[in-house]
Image: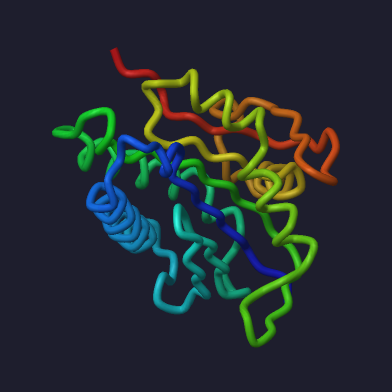
Length: 189
């Protein structure tokens, strides 16, 4: 079935300076934030397929949800919630998220989901170019990388602010020079 896929990852989750208590708090905060940002955006959290990934999550939206509805509104709501959650944190307890969004065909089996779209989503999420940008954009609590096909469809629908995105070439495993589009929040002074 064709649907929207969202992958989320907590950068530097395994930093040895982070205790398991800190990791537990980060995971709890991430899931609370995702739940709340989905609600604010009007996305069906409870009706979505979710898989925990230890330092992140995979979320498959119901096919009835328009993929373009997940981009700018979700990024803005998640950023606002992250800023609120991080206002009293330090380097180790600050929650930052890398988010990748793609659409495509997925299949379900007894263990979860599979398909090229799932593979591509995680190639976007794990791309070294994405990680490098997030490592240097210290001000950004959230970075969202959108697949080229989904981005182009959202443009056709008038659903994204094109000026808020920067093209990024992705190379990760078997994915070679795929084009994607990066959204970062505006720098605050």
